[in-house]
Length: 87
Image (cartoon, one colour):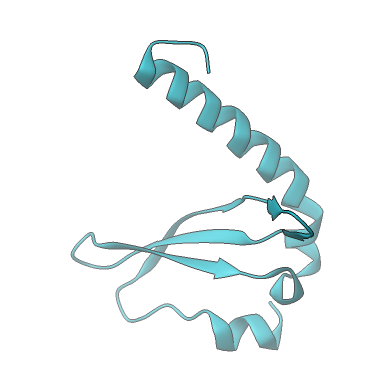
């Protein structure tokens, strides 16, 4: 883990990471490749934190495309199941 990541994202006492996933985003003239981290505290309250590309480790960069592809497919399947229609 890089020093930069360690200072920007910390777990508070009793918190744990539920999941982390890659979700690229873009607009006219810009793009970003953040990793979103879902964190749960002792009471079950969730929060989300963002790891920017310059804060990501070599391992995170290596797994980014795989995580993004899996996340997109899972989101598609869940939305299709919930709405009952092809998305």
